[in-house]
Amino acid sequence: MPHPDRELAFSRLPQVPLAAIVDHMSDPRVVRHMPLLTGPWDTDAAQRFVAAKQACWRRDGLGHWAILAGGRYVGWGGFQKEGEDWDFGLVLRPQDFGLGARITRAALDFARADPRLPYVTFLLPTSRSHLGALHRIGARPLGTVLHEGARFLRFRLDTPCPGTPPSKHE
Image 1 (cartoon, rainbow, N blue to C red):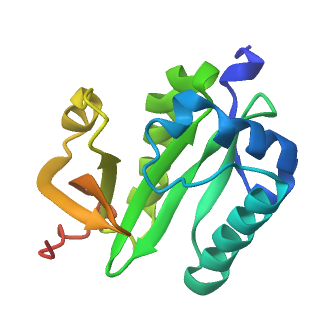
Image 2 (cartoon, one colour):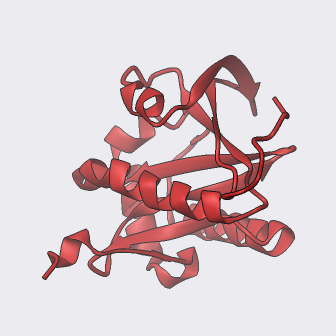
């Protein structure tokens, strides 16, 4: 039988207590790699965050999930439309950083099964120096980009549905 903390589930952010999101997004180990995170996180900031992520779901039919392991909130992430691209983001609680590869594999399996996502992009803060996992999954570096006033490293991974030719879009 699998260990309960190893059972992953993707839920919606309103299902997570706001206090858990506030605690997560206030952790200095998370803040250090979030250049767009400005100001303190309180209940109001968490409510605005959840509302913005829910608006993406309504607008695009896809967005960021609350990620659970064994029913326990471990972070948030998923796919968000950025212009023509679907960007994959993942923000885990520090004590759950070790689940990142498993969660990313599950999310990319979802992307490969969804015809809307022939490729995904990754925007990583320049503070991230360990990029081996992106290279191992086949993501190609595309240089740096300015996004909402902050500089990010940009990567791309083709995720065509089985039987679909890879995208020509760069």
